[in-house]
Amino acid sequence: MSTDASAPPTGKGQETRERIVRAAARLMFERGVTGTSTPAIREAAGVSSSQIYHYFSDKQALTKAVIEHQTQAIVGGQEQLLGRLDSLDALRAWRDAVVATQRSLHYLGGCPLGSLASELAEHEPDARTALAAAFTRWSEAIRDGLRHMIDHGALGPETDPDTLSLALLAALQGGLLLGQTQRDSGALEAGLDTVIERIAHHATPNGP
Amino acid sequence: MSTDASAPPTGKGQETRERIVRAAARLMFERGVTGTSTPAIREAAGVSSSQIYHYFSDKQALTKAVIEHQTQAIVGGQEQLLGRLDSLDALRAWRDAVVATQRSLHYLGGCPLGSLASELAEHEPDARTALAAAFTRWSEAIRDGLRHMIDHGALGPETDPDTLSLALLAALQGGLLLGQTQRDSGALEAGLDTVIERIAHHATPNGP
Image (cartoon, rainbow over all chains, first blue to last red; front, side, top):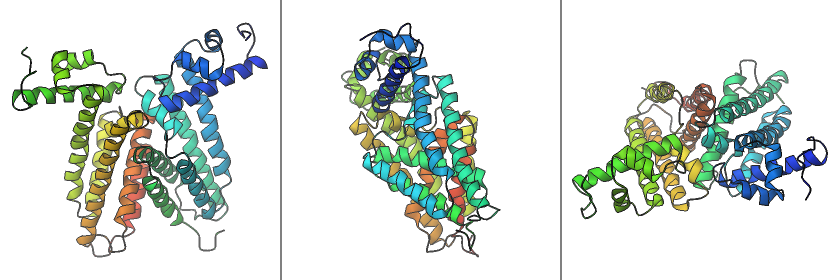
């Protein structure tokens, strides 16, 4: 395999970099950051150590790229789903999809971003800051979905989308951690349903 | 320092064992289980390696003892607080105490049980089972507090304490993780307040 040591991160170089990040993201999800070694990434990505070190000066740089990758994969995906919220039925469909995904994964691993946060928050200040920003982006996506529902008349103008979006993210993160630990969806469903019932309390009588 | 290698775990032996567990619990809270070495525990507890190995055959056995210790310290304490719930004001005072504790800790470390769960759930089946039981005990303490409020007429008989207790624990765990990551109490307060508002929806007009 040729080395990308002199190539800019475009074309084949970009593809190699992404393969490394995807492999590292999967391993860090399965084993944690501490449990993920350079040889394991090398083998999983099918690259050489020099290729890894070409793109990432150290493990912190690679971990930063994994956080960016997971933020885009998870929060980016959530933004697509949540941005289109126009009814309580749509919010409940999002809730059903979250629960179904965890069930299909047998509750393994919890939330990749939540797990990275728990492992790194106290020891990697840059990682903590990046993960805090990812969670803020996530709660803002929920907030924007709720605002969209207010604008479209599904929720009354007295609804507080800032508080309710933070509450829904807290219930989601706690529910994912409890689901991972208890291997069932009880706490996840109870948490999401309770916050959604609170949101539904603001439903307009003639809303969509 | 004398060795306890032949002593039963009573008196001085019991005290030595507890000193090891308390030191390990603190280090695992600060550094994670993987980041906690036997030499660090030895130094923090002021014991010899042979004393540690006398009481704990391996790190898994010590980790199990730490989970038991944290479960008793945290969930045991919560049971005392939650068992006496007799009004919404008491529930809100519990919420205020949780938030005040996190603020006084500067949101460092999150929940010791939640952090252990995130680190160990996929790699230590016995630890996962013990932590799942700890969370069940915690949600049951909340459930019993809500039942107590129903029995005393503070909440109507239609209240669902099983769902609401799981929801409150999910909001709490998610809020603690988000607080640890974002170094503020926004998500914790929003999550607890939203579930408590949902509980307050069942308050009886003439309740205590």
